[in-house]
Amino acid sequence: MHDLTCCVQHPAVSHEGFSSLAVPTYRASTIVYDDPQSFAKRSERGLDGYTYGLHGTPTTRTLEAQLTALHRGVRTMLVPSGQAAVAVTMLAVLLPGQKVLIPDTAYPPVRRLCEDYLAPRGIGHAVYDPLIGEGIADLIDAQTRLVWMESPGSGTMEVQDVPAIARAARARGVLTGCDNTWAGPLLFKPLTHGVDFAVEALTKYVGGHSDLLLGSITVNDLALRKSIKDVLRMVGIGVSPDEAALALRGIETMGVRMTHTGRVARQFAERLQNSPVVSRVLHPALASCTGHHLWARDFAGSSAVFSIVVKPEFKERLYPAMAGLNVFAIGASWGGTRSLIAPMSIAGDRTVRPWDASETLVRISVGLEEPAELWADLERFLAAITAN
Ligand SMILES: *Cc1c(COP(=O)(O)O)cnc(C)c1O
Image (tube, rainbow, N blue to C red; front, side, top):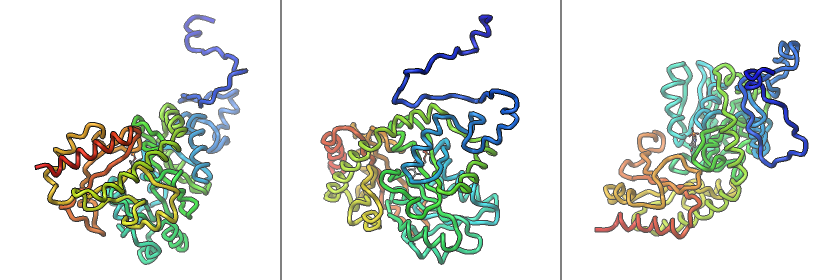
């Protein structure tokens, strides 16, 4: 073989005796075929076959299968981010003239998607009270095609009655989707509560190391799977096997990470209730949190993300005190090994359950640092707020 040909053809080596616990990273744009007949008939391989790198590799399919199993679903589709998972689901379900219902507490970019992208294209939306429960039935009209949920709510942590909303929607032939990022599949499995689309930002707990962006959509109906796959194919969305490989590594330690950080977060949430700086602590595991009884009924445990509401009189002191933290980092995309803190502006994103703009919400995500050191950092922060 000529050297130039030799450079581009990788020799086949034996795999015999090689058995690794790690999932290989299979990179591919093109998939090659044994003969022209197989190539010509490649569409017959179906949605589970391999036809083109964009539509899946053994690496991405392994992660999809793992998420399907955790969610007790039938198929999972990976997409490039959590936001893409929400958007692709809505694009797969909604046609012009139809409508989606979203909770007031939805991840803010979802409200923006409805207002600034779907609305100009003739797809309507209405915002509902996340505590509506089976009362959602009264908001479902002839145009309603999808009810979106996110439980607990972004920042403010209201827990929704997901089974009641799913039941009411299904009784009227309306599909439901749930953004399950706070809980992940270990703490809550939306499909087992009657939801049609379980959506995750894998960027958070599955990735677990603040170094990847990925989302997933899990369904338990092959027709819904096809509707999602159609959008991905037509819009040209696929994910990198490198991102999937990072997520496959992250998911192996998700159980111990979530158990530990969930326990520490809960302890911190309880202690912070006694701080003179804090008017309320918002963590679903606290009895005072809105919807706590639903969390206790439906969720398997506590996640590491919660919020504190800082009393209005300390508003001016908050930023300087936060800048003085040295174990917590300031940032938004939680679920990694590092503890994060961030001030959140909520008021502009609440229309049904208005938020008092004088109340500042601070979101805390507990990571894997020594808990005593984290707590000391928080105590310093609280002391700096009240110092004269
Ligand atoms: C982070 C997050 C998303 C978006 O995930 P990205 O991967 O950052 O796009 C969606 N929903 C919730 C609840 C989130 O916390």
